[in-house]
Length: 131
Image 1 (cartoon, helix red, strand yellow):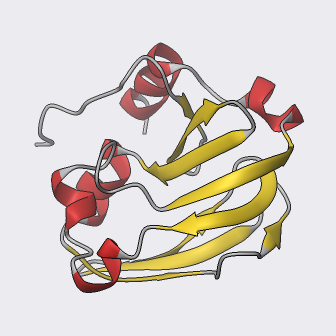
Image 2 (tube, rainbow, N blue to C red):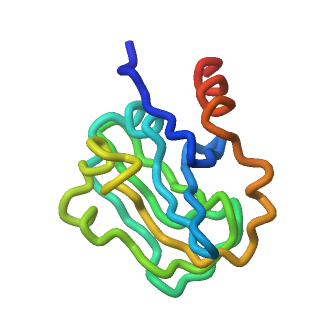
């Protein structure tokens, strides 16, 4: 049985389980509570470097847990302007605080058109209940 998962209302969610918080032209991106719960204990994280331009739908890194390894997908297009370096030594922060200290990258948005296709909290919760 899964734990009670959180779905903050101020975020947008991708079917690939990343969340996006837009502030001006900067998007903060992370893994959802659903994703960290499904992956279980996260043990390693590799993210692309600051300055890397990534198109919407492309991988910006990889996360490994005791259960699986998977790519993390950027839901919008942009250039990485900050990487959460705290996760290099403590990737388990994603498990304990996926929407706060466990954010992955900050991106200067160059293509926000995919935002319209992302889910709000209610839709993402309903989506996860069908999986």
